[in-house]
Length: 215
Image 1 (cartoon, one colour):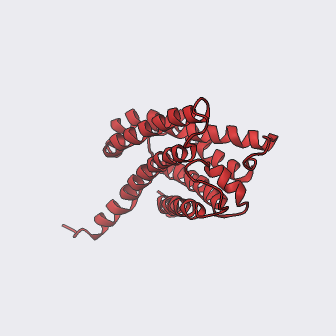
Image 2 (cartoon, helix red, strand yellow):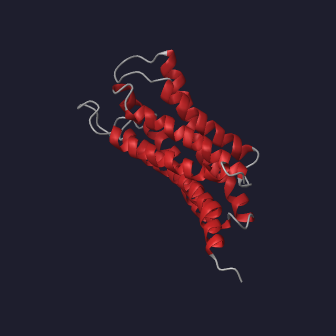
Image 3 (tube, one colour):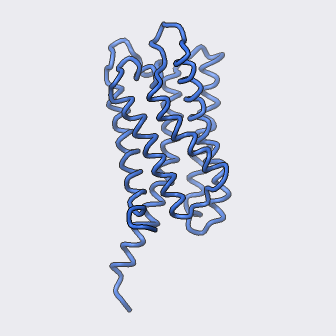
């Protein structure tokens, strides 16, 4: 791996970690009437335009793009549909941050509709990519160790999709904020598992080999 590309896993981890912290910070009172249990992250963001929640979404998207580049450079078994789904996730997050939804209680606009469907694409694509990756990771000796964790978080993401579909439609949005945050946590966990494995492959083992005494 080229010298610069060796830093991709670390850059990705830093961006994803920053975005998680920023999303958490962004939940603290952008407007006092917003209840995180019943208000989506997008609705938080539009109530605090230009705030940390939008920055977090962009950082997550960029971190995911860097992670995808790192996976490619490391020869991870992602070619084909999993790779394209990861690209959809990454791009959709950036677009959703740039194109806002409408404030609570107002009519849906064209930009809000775009935001909604881009968000749907993001939430669906990552669990699907994880599910497709499981057999590929299990068949690759370097990635076999994370095939089961990826399977678990992909399953959690799939269950989260079912839950948010229910609460958004027949469930009348009851606890939609909590369900969405649970789904997002599962999807971030999937990214974290892949990123952590890359760091281990590219840095921990390389450092161990360098420090090992020459026989």
